[in-house]
Every structure is written in structure tokens, then in C-alpha cells.
Image 1: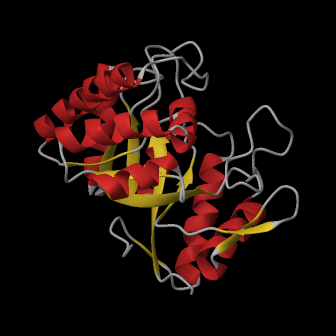
Image 2 (image 1 turned 180 degrees about the horizontal axis):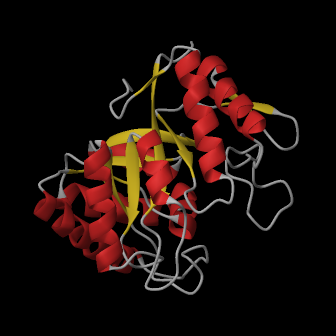
Length: 256
């Protein structure tokens, strides 16, 4: 069944100190949800403050984007953390961002793990449960963004935490439903036409064509474009325009 509404999210606030990452000012007006880095893979106090205020200005919903503690690797390297360590690091990072949100008078609405932590939690039930429990005991009204059909979704549903099924416009898929690793050729989608084609297939037909040509079921509540991508502004602008043209409402509260 074709979707009539969808959320669009982007990973933002990933600059750190003198290092500039992404084009947040150009991306923010085209989003409905912003996943803001919390200092472990990117982001620092000043960047978090600025990004929260930027989202507030544009009426964009704010979410925490916690990571493994991996500034050197931008959170994209797997780390051997115990479930307790993951739980503790989740609380630490959510607490940091929620302080800036509270000071700005805006609510923290959702949480989306970043990079290697996201990928590990998709398949590792122990890590998934640690993430879900940390969110639930921090604020059980928060929404968790994660891959459809993953260990994260299972843990969220079992705990009673609201879950948004997330798909990607700028990444390709393996036949098991996982993202193609960035180290593999063809993992990234850089052409707007290809990104639109993939999102259309998911939203309008409920499936995605994988890198090996197979088609698998795929459902979505929210679509992500990575804010640090070279073509992020071009892809997001084209996708936003296309979805509007075909009558899909872009909103932060799609019916799940």
C-alpha cells in the first residue's frame, strides 16, 4: 500500500571543534527530524547548542544521536563494549543533549544510534536491549529509530517503546535487509535519481531492490539521508521536492 505520509531525518551537529562536518544550515529547512550528535563520534557543547537552536528555528523535531566513544573513527568502528557499558554511554549522551533541549524550551522526541552502534544493535539482541532499556528508563515517551525487522525493533516492541522503521535514501541494501558495508563498492547512492527510485520503491511498493538484484519487503516510517554525505544537500532537495510533487506529506508524526 502506498504511503501518504513520511518523516525525513538527517544526522546533524557532527562538527567538532575546528572540524566542520556537513551543511546543517542548508539541510535543516528540508527535514522533519534532526538526529543530533552527542559528543562521542562528533558534536561538542557549542555545536549541540547551535544545532538545537537551528532545529528550533525551523520547527524540526530533535533527537539524540548517540554513538560508540570513537571520535577518531567517527563512530563507524565496532567496539567491544558490554551491554552495561552501552547502557551507561546511552544515558550519558542522551542526558547531554537533553540539557540543551531543555534550556531551549524544546522537547527531546527521539533517539537514533549512530554508525557501528546502530549496525551492531540491529543484530545483537544484548546490545539492542541495552539501548532500549536506557531509552525507556530515561524517558519512555521517546521514539527509537532503527532498521525494520531488526533486533532493535524486537526489543522496542517487547518493551513498549515506540519504534520508527528507518530506511536510507543514500545507502544500498544487502539481501538480508542490512546496509551494504561502506567498505564495499556500491554501498553509497550519490545520484538523486537513484535515491528517489529507491525511496519510491519502498514507500509506494513496500520493497527494496538489493545490490544482488533481489527484491525484499521493506517498510518505513522515516527516511534518512546522512548529513555528512558529499551530495546530501542535492539528494535531500530533490527527494523533498519529489515527495511533495507526488502527494506524500512530509511530517514528523507519520502513522505507523
